[in-house]
Length: 200
Image (cartoon, rainbow, N blue to C red; front, side):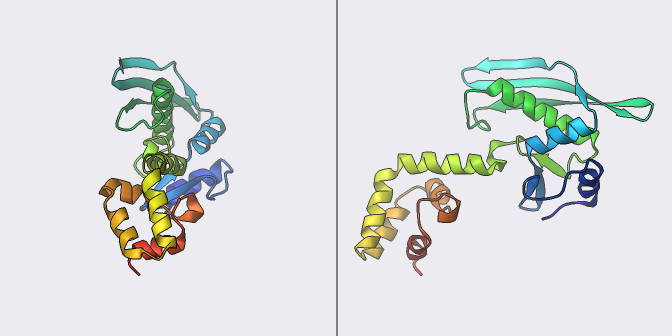
């Protein structure tokens, strides 16, 4: 994992062992789970003022709110604030825009108060960070293209590999990328099917 000394020291301070249950490396940037940040906030005795809604649209969804957080530091108190927002482009589960906006704002405040903003991100910063969100995106795409996938699998089973490759390439590039998910991680295409589709 690509984890800075600052993050390692923080986790050690709050007695949270570094593991995949805490976060993961996302292309060189460490992503902390929302649950981990909540545990850090509890250990560091961080409190929050009531969130202030500063923007609200429901169609299309566009919500933003400000959250102020406070953390005791010796005999004084450190204060930070941040804005959490969500809209159609960064919200996969459409039913909870206000809750997601608040979670993002609080997580950003925790990162600021702990001095690791910029070194780590919250899993709630964008739904695309979340492994579960990636799986949900795959499943939705697979459902939309289920007839094509069944046809590809049947063609492969009948040794019509060229036709299977052509059928897969007929999908748009975004769908090809989304569906190119390892079978061990919930993808519909097996290792041997992906190998054939790569033309190996």
